[in-house]
Image (cartoon, rainbow, N blue to C red; front, side):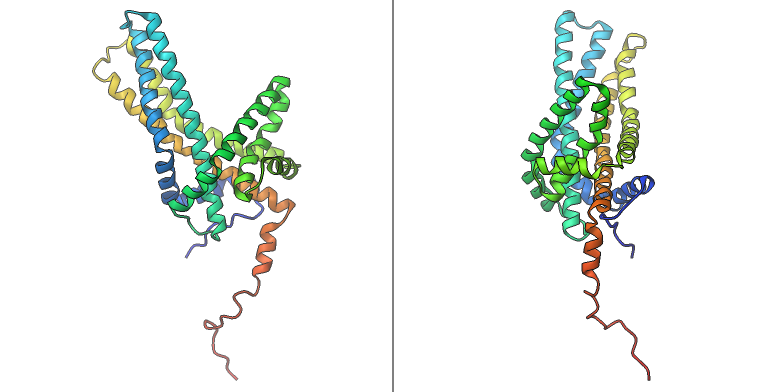
Length: 290
């Protein structure tokens, strides 16, 4: 029987990428069950608002609005709601993934149930929500002061929420630890986040580009009978593909475990403590012969 992935161990860049996909594959069913149930509301809301926004865009391009300003106003409102649902879905998907991994670790690399993940999600939701707002403000300040400091703190801030959830820590503790463990490992962490973001972005483009093209091409080609079904289909596909943001969440957790292991060696200490714990069970040993 294949052994589950050991979370607490040192990994290089390639191992983080490979193990992220492996973890997702091994835990696909229970993880996505939790994602669909907990994040389903925002996915449905995102589908409705996205479809409505692009239908409004199509109406503006085809000139079906008698009141152009009113059409633009409706489009802006639906677009803002769509963006809100998009951000909320991403945040919830990220938190559910972190909670899943935290329970997985606490159970000794055993797949958690939905009830366990939901319990962790409720416990951390408001703490993570407030911390995320604070991180967003600090990120904006970093980019306003200069682009380079903003880029530098980006992977560091990305580690704060995983530390808070996995170690059940305060924001200040996670903030200080993120700066400490990423030292001399900034490039590898940034690379993992960048690559995983590119993978998810490319996957989402399979829905994003067609829906934009369909909406804008209504002025050139008569798509009256199929425009609406296509926009609804690609809007739903776009929001379903949002679940792929679980992959960067897994990757950043594996980065955290690797960085923490290099600095603190907690996984090594746990393995040392387990030495000899199974020695009492000799039932499977061969009978001694004299």
